[in-house]
Length: 340
Image (cartoon, rainbow, N blue to C red):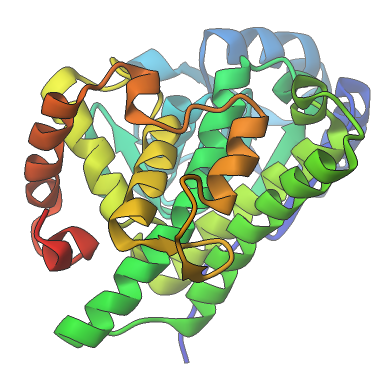
């Protein structure tokens, strides 16, 4: 029987006031514990204004994420407040300190919020998932819309990653985890279904919908599910395949985030893989139309869907595709089978 760590508390609050109420309960439950608060610049302001006043009877220390990963074995909890890099530093600090982890993201643009992986300074390392996750909707909705696009992209990439994993089983005999696949696919389909439903009913304008509580609640839950699927699998296979290798190649050639955010790159790469396969990942039929069903939905919301949208031309794309398989040696994907 395997033991898998997953969050025991996931609280999505509609407002900062509601979050404060939830945190009061959490700190009361852990008033005999000690904390290390790690934060970004914005996270520090958030900590000072909303969280620090709640710590009257709590023993705590503070550390800015610019100090990097630290060891703090006197702390029972590492409480990380900030964006993706800050949360990843918190994950590694928790591992090094043998402590439990709380995450309070100030933006969410990928499924790393609950994944067992941390990426700091371009190096990916095994880490732990948070025991508790608190999300303030009023902060997340203020993120640049490109961050939301990126989070959606990281989710839809699960569909091509699953195809890669199943192909690796067929061709290479690689072991797969069916439950991890179920969670990964459910995470992707939940957000796609939410987008499609609003598109068909024309309930809200695209930008209004993408920043609504109704959408972002499903968005956050889907990203959590995606991260947990990797914990169950014991690796990133359920959520990372050929589309991620393509994104890694773009970063290696041009520098991280020089072309686009990671999630946007993998979204475009997923649609590119669909065309290479000639297979519509969403309706699971042969791709006959110029646009797949997935591309139609994403395009409706103004999301980038072609490499030209992020200033990558045909010649550059050839170099990227040739380089992609080498960015993670030993990971068999559709790129190996199609010999592109």
